[in-house]
Image (cartoon, rainbow, N blue to C red; front, top):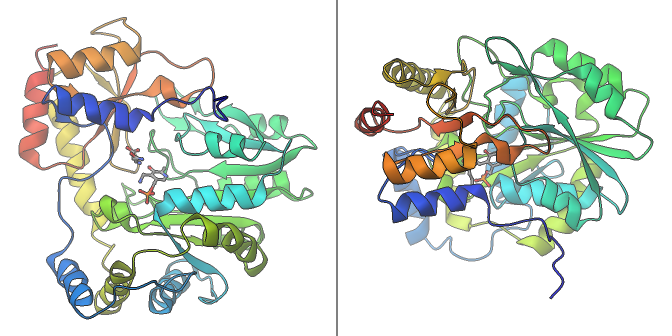
Length: 382
Ligand code: PMP
Ligand code: GLN
């Protein structure tokens, strides 16, 4: 059969997690926590499972959950959302991304992404007949990544239909400032370009920085699909409960796809999350402090290795440079390290179009101290 996605193989997250499994290695590759969700949330899931909430949820999501999210975003970003018409519960952020990209992109449309780029965007653009244009983030002397807005501006064309943003950024931890949002607004002001903002790490941001959601900017919000997920926030990546927030006209188009992608999302989990937010409306507030400690501890441990660290401003990922250890390409080095040192990571070059840096790996530090200690013990031998 002639493939619709000839250049696409198996996602790096599956490849590296499988290799970690096969080698019995410590898996710091795919991003998932080693912690369980709050027992109170688990009890609520169990309650709803045994109380009969086991049939189809409404297509746009359980209304109580959408109302709880509307209340949260009104407080955090001063944005009054209509839970009926502007919030859709999706099967993880992944489905929200798929449905929004598919709703917007037509054959021949150009879509801009920032490299290193999370791998779930470009294949969906291709399935819709769109063309992805890659704008690399710039890297300063400290190794920190940021958006070069001038370069973005130069990449726009009459065919540009969509820009996909992902801040807090996976894999680099880069974040946007309020000034960045204003710059973006001024660049696209006289265009019809849509925005998709993947904000799944919105609650994991360090050193007192504040997450700048596209929802918080009046001008950008009018043309945005803002996507998030409970996976990272609730230590529940396996539940695949995400959501997409967009103005009414955009939500209407999103739901035309969503209803035939998965129709509706797991009912008991939605009810449990709605109750949980009602009981603990600030459930997400301790997350940045929690991961900030883990980030610092992991960085301290890595201090006794030959890796050079890029400061991490958000997410639960640490980028390291291994030039002092090897000149092998990163895909090979990551595989070899999984086999020989028993620690799996993600090679960064796979998130680039061209030319990728060849000496960077990503570690996920959302793990208990003992796991991180054991991993770094192994890495010290390099
Ligand atoms: N976008 C980014 C940037 C991610 O890192 C992830 C993984 N959490 C996703 C989307 C997918 O989220 P979900 O597991 O909710 O589909
Ligand atoms: N978002 C996760 C990561 O960056 C992976 C999710 C997946 O495996 N699809 O590691």
